[in-house]
Image (cartoon, rainbow, N blue to C red; front, side, top):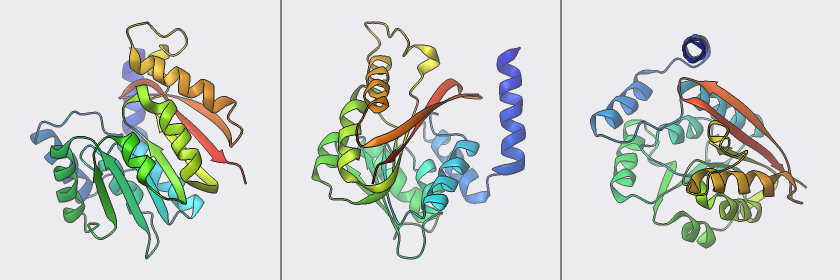
Length: 218
């Protein structure tokens, strides 16, 4: 019953503040029809990413974990003229799907997809970026954190999704590498000398999880 009210409130919030237009609906429908994992952010989370990009005035943004490009489109829509979105994706089929997503959204000249292992791609990039969003394999979040610290501009914003794992990060099971990675990421972020940060616990139609929010110190 409690989960049901969380889902109902999620729908209420999305209906008021994050209604999907035809493009976003098409992106989600295409991804479902293509059999992509249904793990993309919700509409409300997409709107939150959009607002964070607007509030920071981001002109260069980085995403780790493209999937079908749904969250990428939300963020890219916040870019000013001349802005650029770089997104990293391991799976070649997902990367190809995302490129078509960006074409349909009229953002193919703004969004660049880099295929390959995210850590290798991050190490090859040069900053500065104004905003970075982590939404990929949690077991490598600690490594992504160090690359984000290198790539973000002073005052830049780091967002990392799925860092609570239904509470599994409190005492991560030995065989749960995702929870262990998220827990280690949280531990490092909390005391990282280059960031001031917090984790927000979240509930909704996607269950119980959390989002890390961090600002790179000047």
